[in-house]
Image (cartoon, rainbow, N blue to C red):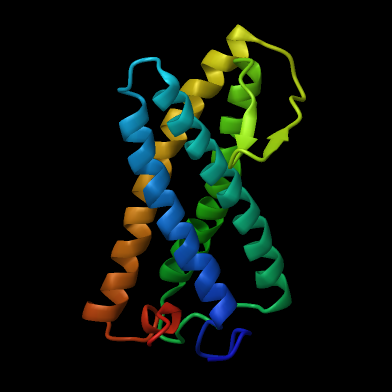
Length: 181
């Protein structure tokens, strides 16, 4: 398999970014559901730190993914797609990228405003760029929560669209992102 994207297929690096992001976001959603119910304890702090570490990893992967997308543009959409389908595909991808940036950033700034460090996998602490701020903490906590649900919903719509292309429209939209496609 080639590294770069081709005319009708995503390359290995784009596929890696895509599927690694999917796996990380699913893990983050599961960890978020688990950690919020934990009583205050060392375990809760460890789980929160894992959540933050994976969130920073999603942010880094998204940055790399966008750089790669610029260096190796994605394959064109199928010729038979209607104008509204093309707009929907572009809009959903744009929203996914925005959420994949905004969600980790709101989590990071939320931690800073709550005066909690962001420690990445126990070996790197991000410098706190703001001081404690209760009002900002509360706003970002709610924003982070709501964006998590929005991301989850958008992921489901994205997956449903890929499955529609595969099973109903019988085109190559899904296969071109699968390593074995």
